[in-house]
Length: 204
Image (cartoon, rainbow, N blue to C red):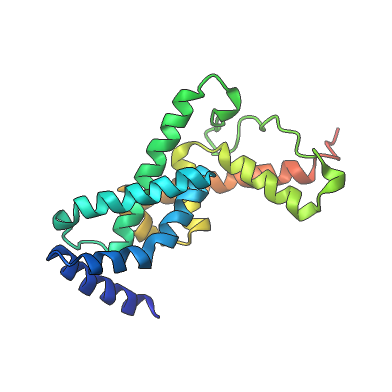
């Protein structure tokens, strides 16, 4: 099914749901719950949190259904709700565990590069893991250390595959601001990859 057909189906289901047709709302949930859950899982790294965020997202959507004017696609709207719920949960998690230094985001130089590499043992269990698995772990750890705004746009663009326009709808930020944060996030991850490959050859 093309995006245009899916969007038109959403519009028809939305109109019925706003008139009180619960089956239409359930159809909207069925069409979007996997993507919402996937986004929440990638942002929180927790299946339990992702499941709760998915429930909270569609509960919020149902409670505000009549207020939704259709300025954005329904899918973008629920993505924004899900991202907001995920960010709130991440903030609460960080507040509760603020004493743990590893949860603090990295510092960036004015050029957008990491001021210091995360002091992580990238080579742990190296003999037992394939190189691609190790690299994937290094990238995930580096992504987890990105400041929330940088990590959010990286996940939405490079992992979830949203367009800049859709990300703007989700976050409420301008496209230039989104591009700037994404560029800095990619630079940070590139440095993490460089650090991974140079770990055995630190140089002079």
